[in-house]
Length: 165
Image (cartoon, rainbow, N blue to C red; front, side):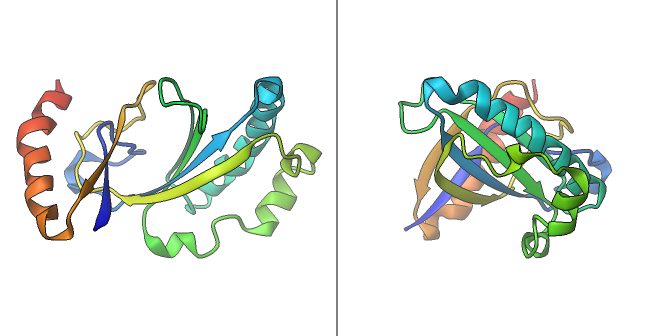
């Protein structure tokens, strides 16, 4: 069985609706930050934000997002999401020259959270909204490979119209 991740609130950067379904790959890193390290972690992510902005400017990624997780247990409490326009962009996602040119801040190498896991997903449907939501609901659904098409069709015909509202 393969896992199919459906993200009910699509993460789309500045993509014109006339282009149809954009080719988007999302890499999600699930991070556990201990309560005493939250401020340090957020400072570190703020430093990395400059690197991500340069990666967007150089067309390496289409977006970067940081979410605080609520109501998902205690395994992780933050998720960072990097979106890419193609799998080819994943070959060198963090060029050393960008990191060196953007920041010499020691926060880039400080560890204030533990990456629990990473997941990669390809966008299969979206509502057409071109900015990230303040809140996101994620459902991790296991679908047998032979049923994948029927599942996606159901999402598009039943749930997609309600998410457009």
